[in-house]
Image (cartoon, rainbow, N blue to C red; front, side):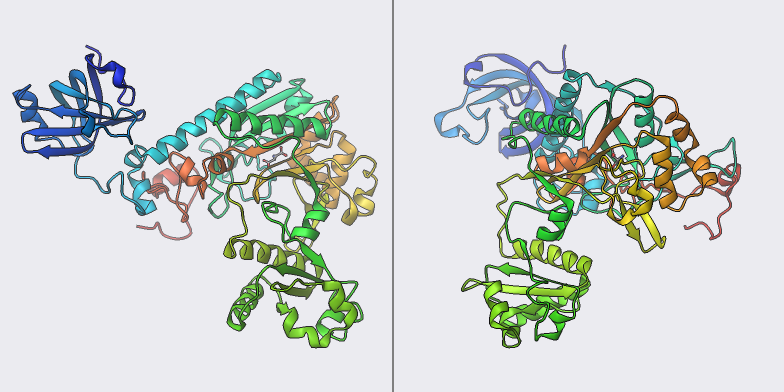
Length: 571
Ligand code: ASP
């Protein structure tokens, strides 16, 4: 006999009089002294079983033993419920199954939490993830994951992309994070890095004539874990030969829209709006602005150049936010404290400083009645950073964000390099393989501060979904970038000799993109973090509460790898 012939969520009024066998988990059991009611559950829904001792004394006997989450199998007759017993909340609420045969297939120990309990501690949920997965939330999220990825694979298929597997164990890949290292028993003292992305392999696929590559690639980055970050994550990774930027953006937009449609959500309008990096930093103080609300940063540097107010006069940059609210003195003090934590020297409220300002300045600011202008004066990056954070902070606090809106947009025209405090020189903004805007190649070494890259980021409601670029396909240009980053010829050959060789053997022009799938699904599922859409995520400390990994290894095992710990093993 089959384990089941219908799913729990399938039966409707017209199924009355059918004989069925069902199997699933005990969602609830209600013992009415004689009659026992069980809500049997699987991922399709719930079904009410009625165990009546007059109908089946044997089943009634067994029913007393049932507890939540026991797995049951029942055979019986589908009957229409009496009108007063109909449950309009359940799709199967018009029927029930009168049980003739009942079997406890497997039992459960007492549960660490109930499936319908709210605010269960997350570490506990992850420790018993197999239980947590049975909740409607996790079922919905994991299935949405699958639906969206299938839709993306369909788009890739339709457009002739080829899924090519690339190695996880490789050399360090410069994506800006630390590598996870893998010791190698056969070569003690040497390490593979786990791929931070398949970046160079996908470029080599282009040199190899694959033309359109993609992969739902797992990547590893040793970074602090956050709402939108895990050590390992998946990205839709793609690369195309003989394309312009617009071709890549078009494919990515099709993937987003395809996933929305498959998920039954209203897809965003295409094409997604474009915003230059410079504009984004000026108007929103961020390279991933949330455009669901306005509250643009205003420029005041010119107007305050000769201000009587010394703080403005002496600052390289003065900008402000007009907030549609007034603040009490204590609220203002609190905002100022927050701004200082973000790096500002202060946060000036126009009403408090207006006596120092000229008519011309006041007229230029034009703040409507009931609003407040908040100023930051400092070096330009500090001003942008603080006002950008303040903009989002206040929008959340004042409830200015329309949570029902989805705004996708592209950030384009990034600088190729940024100054690195850490290295005391230039480092890449995206990664070192991004091409310059056409015609700016000669500037790479002559004027690194002002070269633009053909780099683009995709933003959804203030989350960076992913990045891509048109790549450098000429070895000399690639070497110029390496030189700006302070790499001499030997170092270039050592780390990237294979790439430089490939770029000298007929590389086609190419470009690509990578989108964080887990981030994308979390937003699609309206979840606050990627752990809620990941089957077995890690917690902030970097541990896996389920398996207890990471674990210590005995000295003998480490010895085989040529490793000796400097600190004693933790207990
Ligand atoms: N390799 C980049 C990343 O993983 C994406 C790309 O440039 O295609 O972020």
